[in-house]
Length: 99
Image (cartoon, rainbow, N blue to C red; front, top):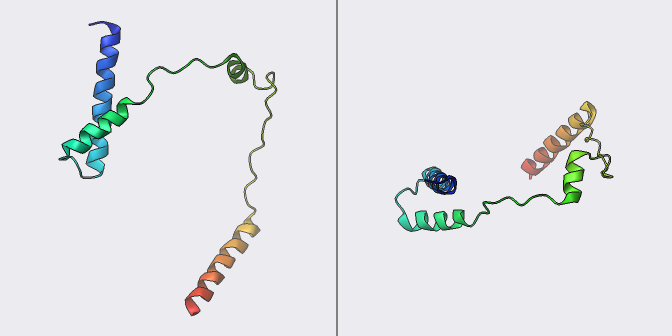
C-alpha cells in the first residue's frame, strides 16, 4: 500500500466517522439515503490546500514589514455601562410585562 492509498483510506474512514457522528447527533442513524448524501457532500471538500501567495507568505512571516495594520483589541465595557445596560433591559422587560 502506497502513501497515497493509505492517505485515501484514512480520509474515507474520517468521512465515515464524521457522518456517523452527525447522524447520531440527529438520531437518524437508520437512514441510508441520508448517509449516502452526507458522504457525497463530505467528498466535495478540498483535500489539497493551496500554497499561499508570495504576498500572503510575507504577511504571515512579518506582518509589520508587509505593511499590515494592527488593530487594537476592543476595550471592555466599563462596569457602569454594564450596570446601566442591565437596568435598561430590566426596565424594558418590566414595561413589556405590564401591558
